[in-house]
Length: 256
Image 1 (cartoon, helix red, strand yellow):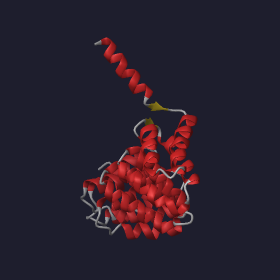
Image 2: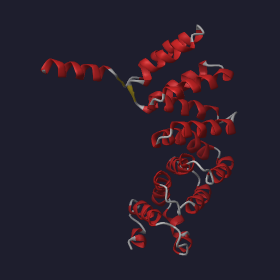
Image 3: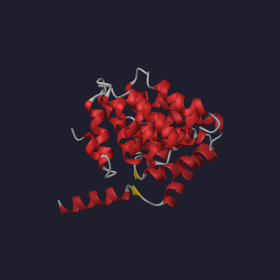
Image 4: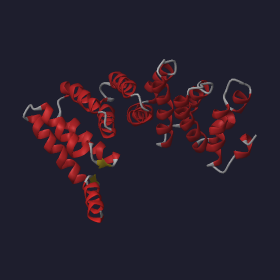
């Protein structure tokens, strides 16, 4: 029994990758199959060497950059489809990062594909992984273009698309989104403060906490709007209170 347990531990540790060079070598190996026009061997190698292993997300993003640099633009859609079909946590990280890298020259197409993959994945972690890397990064780097898209997304019938608004705002605010855009983003969050869907509440609430933590003055400026709208749910006000408590300021305003 003792030998069996040790063997299991060894196998487990062998499947943990923490070294950037190993990730780059594994990606290069998979790309060697791609260069030989063997798409199935390519995706199998990528899956076996990286996507079924325990790899930190930043290292998977390194792999995504390597793949994006090597794969011709007109062939990327097919590779993205292969990655999404694997339905691995790691494959969503790689696909999300590859879409992020396309935002500069294929902004709307990248957002549309991100939305499609979130709906297809149909899990909260798929929404969050892709939402941060695509919608969140787009809001941070191209807020003038992205804010109207987020407003459009607010009316979407799919819960993951609406949840991803919160994911995007959380990411962008945490990474330093300019205050003028944070104000507009919070107005959008307020408009979603009436939702009752569990997954949507989680995503929007995450963003509300982040705005309250980093910009408590925006919350202060919105107090009348919040107090004057009885449709805004308790969960929204609770997230505000939690976020404010992390600034050590204004926390007492929402203790009741």
